[in-house]
Length: 507
Length: 120
Image (cartoon, rainbow over all chains, first blue to last red):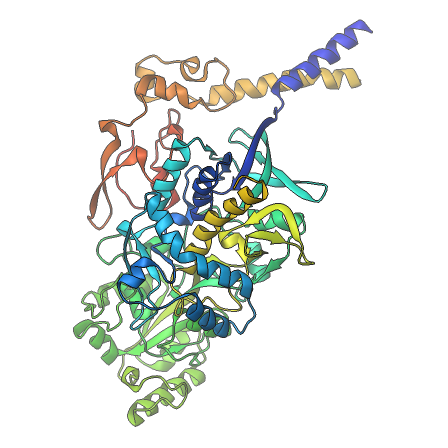
């Protein structure tokens, strides 16, 4: 009997010594995610005199906060200096009209009104803005550009301040579950790099995990096109949304993404997206060619959209035909791209008017890789690309007729962008839709508090950035509001801790 | 019967630890300098990664000249970087530098993809 007891004791002793011991941390504000939103929340929380802990799943901070180039604001001092008159009222009306009043109007307005002061607040905390610009001809100049062209400067400045001022950052420590007691969120359970459980007790939790663009199941479930590919930081697997849903959060606008238009099909991001000649984006000129305002067709060969439309409208149109399609052009248009240049360039990565002098070589590589197609006849091109030759013929015949008439009676595109497709060989570049992020998430109020399916606040729970929905009805709205996704994150990060401090009686 | 099953457990744990420890060999300069498992792991039967302090105790915190490197990418573009105080924040040494397998540049794995540099 004694032997058995000794044996059992030693077994349990060994098990308890080797089993995973839980670590407990107590704080005022727990921030889940150290991206643009989370890093900003960390700085803001400390500024409010709150204790703050950030848990970050990845080994490095920043997430897609490293990718953002600029951020949105209206009525900022930088805009006023340049006589840019857009303000909260004007922008509110434009945006609500665009989204058909199907978004959260209160949340939109409160956010708009705060964006101007956030530019100065960020500068106070070490962020430098180079200028305010627009990406479009005669566009809405709301895009405040980060120094160096990337938000990594914000991430670096905020991360440094957070640590210098006593904030606690745990990387490789994914949060797994919110702690929900008596109807309140009072912390979260995370897992550290050694697989040990970490219990974090907090008076409030800010969820900032960046949406779900890396999660294939959620993409198939929520988005109009299940094959939506993504360009941005890894780790955005929908963790925040999953955790919030488990405590009753209402999810809104789950179908909308930050639409990036057509990209070269099945080509790695870093091989096609980067500054021409200065990066690894070997095929960026083909990406630019894909996006010139000439004929684009569905997978079967039917024309889809006015090819001068914005990324989001082009994306919407292609979402309707399965998310993929082709740019189709002939030998003459190819020579125009080579000799006269690609008129539109591509968002600063390929200069406007860039002469595509290495077209033949690059296109041949594209053929080998399977996203470029060349044929002597349109029928042959249809065969190679899987298009219906009858449909392709209808599209190209009509385009030729419209070119001759100098009038697009199909989609009313500006006639200067009409091109005939009648001189062989014929070319096709295959594209599929990409996004920079999902935008749907938990419904929030203007304090970034998460609300449930009855519209009631879930105490202790905040969501910011792409974990918070409510800004977009069925499309991204870049062409009327530039830099909103980053601004939503940064402003949420600034204001959620302020509200927390208020409710805790700190300020 | 139940006792026999339960009695096997401690040995299973022990064998797992030993197997894990033996699969990791010390390489390169650490081997030449006759470091052992316990030099970094503080035990001769380690079950997990060595702590950050083990690296810092000998190598310092990399905030000095070792911090500035030249990064080149495939198109010939070059830039200087303070690689240990980058926008990636404070990342653990062993994310890039390994004693037991080839070192990698985490910057490439995460986002940049094409910096060309030898990682010690």
